[in-house]
Amino acid sequence: MRVIFMGTPGFSVPVLDALAAAGHEVVTVYCQPPRPAGRGKKERPSPVQARAEALGLPVRHPASLKGANEQAEFAALGADVAVVVAYGLILPQEVLDAPHFGCLNIHASLLPRWRGAAPIQRAIMAGDAETGVCIMRMEAGLDTGPVLIREAVTIAPEETAGGLHDRLSALGARLIVEALGRLDGLEPEPQPEDGITYAAKIDKAEARVDWSRPAEEVDRLIRGLSPFPGAWCMAGDERVKLLGSCLAEGQGAPGEVLDDVATVACGRGAVRLLRLQRAGRAAQDAGEFLRGMALAPGMRLE
Image 1 (cartoon, rainbow, N blue to C red):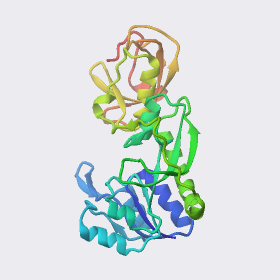
Image 2 (cartoon, rainbow, N blue to C red; image 1 turned 135 degrees about the horizontal axis):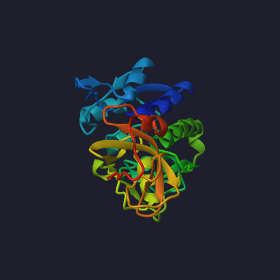
Image 3 (cartoon, rainbow, N blue to C red; image 1 turned 30 degrees about the vertical axis):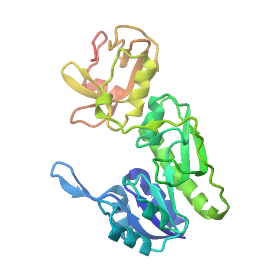
């Protein structure tokens, strides 16, 4: 099929690779414009742009698709379908209607649960037992379109958003190739009205750990915000990111370090910290971290 691909971050790259490997003709790749990054604030292309250029594919990165010229250029590509995954721009109706089979979105949740920007993080933070991927025919509303294919996965007890991100990216790549292979025979299933939830964009203000919360909530926050933006707390006068955890036995004052393996008391129960990061340093597993920075029993994290 003649495919327009629309995506920007690393989550989208395996999908682009899968489309190319399956023999589809990717006529153009759309992604967000390069952004200033790093200490020098030099413009850096997105992961999708970098991969598309490596594959020799033409790339466009308009700041908006609302203009008539951009919409005309999109329609002139004569695509059978557009595949959209974490693109980052709203698609006007003129764009949605241009490809013969419309625009298909790969969404990392079991719709209608977790429509919106941060479905992977929100599923972990809410304590969901499972999540998955839906291939959806796009409409003007936010993730409201009918679903063509869905597949669920179990969220593991110690899984972080980063690990789940990678699993769902690979799953989305497999499912979109399957969907395109039998597009004529798929029956779009309208989303039910019950069970709608919205995955709001992660606010950095959410990231500071409140040790007075139950251990289950603290653990889910740490795992749900790993690796970005990273839950954090103060250890003395130093800010430390917490990037991995599990539930543990123990009790004490909220934030109290209970032993020499980084078990910390919460408002109810305790968590064991598995991966941590000091400011300006690389992330480390707890054993290595504790050799460089002591979290002594009785110390209070805040």
